[in-house]
Image (cartoon, rainbow over all chains, first blue to last red):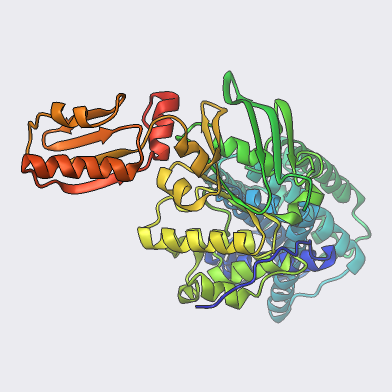
Amino acid sequence: MTTVDYSPKPGAAPVGRMLLAQTAFETRMLLRNGEQLLLTVVIPTVLLVLFSAVDVVAVEGPGKRVDFLAPGLLALAVMSTAFTGQAIATGFERRYGVLKRLGASPLPRWTLLTAKTGCVLVTEVLQVALLSVIALALGWSPHGNPLAVAALLVLGTAAFSGLGLLMAGTLRAEATLAAANLVFILLLLAGGVIVPLGKFPGAVRSVLELLPISALSDGLRSVLQQGAGVPWSDLGVLGAWAVLGLAAAARFFRWE
Amino acid sequence: MNPVPAVEIAGLVKRYGDKAAVDGLDLTIARGAITAVLGPNGAGKTTTIETCEGYRRPDAGTVRVLGLDPATQSAALRPRIGVMLQSGGVYAGARAVEMLRHTAKLHAHPLDVDALVERLGLGSCGRTTYRRLSGGQQQRLALAMAVVGRPELVFLDEPTAGLDPQARRATWELVRDLRRDGVTVVVTTHHMDEAEQLADHVAVVDRGKVIANGTTEELCRGGAEDALRFDGPPGLDLGPLLKELPAGATAAETAPGQYRVAAPVDPSRLLATVTGWCAASGILPERLSVQRRSLEDVFLDLTGRELRS
């Protein structure tokens, strides 16, 4: 039988190495999870291809159908990963004691949260690349300032992450699973992703415009479809959601 | 050696609502030994251990682990301790070896993962994800994760719960190897035999307090004397036997045909007297055994209650 020398030699790994390892590990866990891939890759891709090809929803604005749809589905991709996927995964990690056990490891909590953010960003880069390639193949001609697009994606990620972590850290895992999926469907339909907000009555519309998904899809559309400048009001809405969501998550998140 | 004890707990109180899970608990745990925290479920073992691990803040009293306050100096403490929770702690979709390898990466000088995998027989788990591992495999993985960072002090919360006897022994063997190499081990259990077999020191916890504390030897020595048991025909007259033994001796038929004899004499003399009496009476004693006082007896003496598992 193998003998192992257990004589103590304790020490935390350098924090950069821990961060890298944790990010890589979380990303591997996410990409292995079939339900997560359905949510983050399959649904946005199918919706993009389907609604570009078939005239079921009346799109708005200049250009082809795909020019309206691609920005909305980029917004959906951000929501699926930063909010729905992250909430469900984190909720179950909490339920199975993963977060608790990591709390006794050398990994600092901020490093764990940074790693989760890193995992979300890596996934989003893959999603954006995939959706962009498909949209371009469908004849998409994006406009506008790439930096404005990046700012929208980053603030949108922060807003959805805060809300997702708030849900995962306060509700039971099963409740998070149900609620996160329900919110995903509702916001998909009522957040300007594939159905233009102009289709809703004025009063409803002005409320819907304050949703983070609406701000993100509207902002991306104004830049990518219409070639507008920096959409400050949409960035403002996303910024407010980010501050509220992350502050509430920091305040109410329970690790066990 | 090192003057700071592994764990020093003084007057620890932890309440959940109105109920005090830990109620004025004092305990000092020496370095380099295996200490069992023994008690029935709900005695406050896990709450005590989790306070040492930094998960709970004391409502009163002080806790020092390796001289540090787990509530406020957790960043300095965490790399030096290894933790095995009662259950869980692993990503549901992670494979055993992959999870262990990742845990190792969080430490500066981890053990060789391949050797540890082989030592604990986790290699056969292959590509199976955690949620599909057997209970025993999950326990072994959690144990491996607790020791892979080469900690000075390891907390194991019910490490053998639900294991078959063979797996239990393998776990005990690893715990003894840890002691051999100078690691301090604190293990909670509600199994008397586990504490007796494994621990150098035992702290018996009941209703949130330490009610007895010492080496296994010390705990079993105090109080009642050793006893001899044997089986024979039912309804024997034990009076003549008692006359051959010194004052204070007791003899009783504990169940039909089962006898227990205790006397304040050397066990070998007791044995000689009983076998001599049996031979003279034409009885063949069966299943004759001399029994040391067990931790179970200690617990019964202290609490008058059964140690429920």
